[in-house]
Image (cartoon, rainbow, N blue to C red; front, side, top):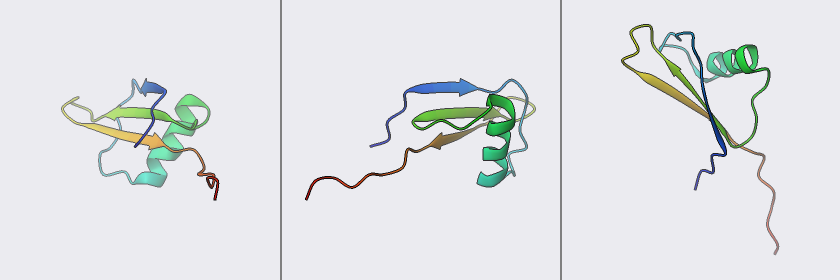
Length: 64
């Protein structure tokens, strides 16, 4: 299950052809850093599509 603690909406449009690395770079530029369990939403220029990046926390092994 994906845990999301906060949702951030960017105010500037994003080219929907952008890949994961480009979107992550935009998150760092706009929001300062990508935080674990946060979702970042971007729209295209006409605001007809949404791209969501969910930044996961590092997985820690459970008890054995």
